[in-house]
Amino acid sequence: MIDHDRLFKELISTFFVEFLDLFLPQVVSQIDRNSIHFLSQDVFTDVTFGEKKEIDLLAQVRYQQQETYFLIHVENQSYTESAFAKRMFKYFARLHEKYDLPIYPVVIFSFDEPKRAEPQNYCVKFPDLKVLEFQFTAIQLNRLSWRDFITQHNPVAAALMAKMNISVPERPQVKAECLRLLTTLKLDPARMQLISGFVGVYLELNAVEEEVFKATADRMGLTDKEVYMEILTSWEREGIQKERRATITKILKLRFGDIDASLEGIIPALLKLSPDEYMDSLLQANREELLSRFHG
Image (cartoon, rainbow, N blue to C red; front, side, top):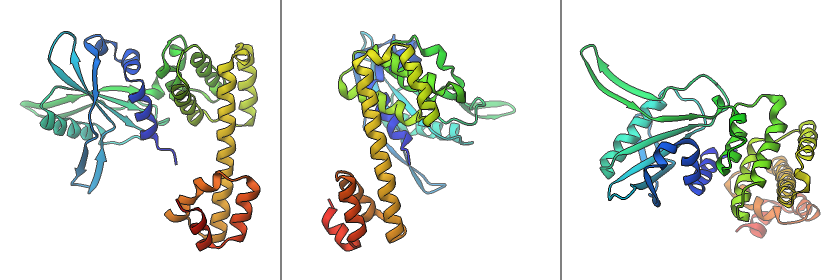
């Protein structure tokens, strides 16, 4: 299962200023960029449903040449939810009570479907009185055209194009455009890996699409770039690891039925072995031997 919230949190926290530059230029123009400080994640309990909710990202920033601070709350929403605007208001109210600072709320709607515009306000009113009208900035990726971002010299654009409004035939071209943009950015290897990994997760191509992608990348002249070859190699390694994990998981299920946390925990250690080595271990050792040999 893809941990969408973790991927988006890692992307936005790593490239926070670039995220603001891309989507909230009116906000970033007002702040001291050196003042950005990420606050600890707050966990709220929803007493109605008995669930704990952890907010995604909360940054404290200062206005330029002032000692006045405010908060920017960024939430990723990877699925449609009818009461989401109400939940955002609850976050706002609790954060405002805790920090007593103005809060600028932002939501990234990152799901593929539906493509209708999501509500971005929560209102409480009576015929004679409007008690509350809470609004937040909404960035609904599946309603954005990736073509509008291909000239943006911005790592967040290189990543998020992979989640925008893309028709099926366009998928190989968009992946190539993401890579083209990425090769123009002078990023350190870790940040380069973060962007390329994000694109690899959300634009995983089938065999036919892969051939179209490579032909498109070749026409763009990407195959002559060292960065492109490094990214392609890392994707190939990740693909091999994914296949190995699928094989190991399948054999574990065949031998032991449902995979519990203990068996899940030894998979990373098995992945470090060669295929012959992990196949021998999986087929010959019983459950207790496997756990004893590879635990931790």
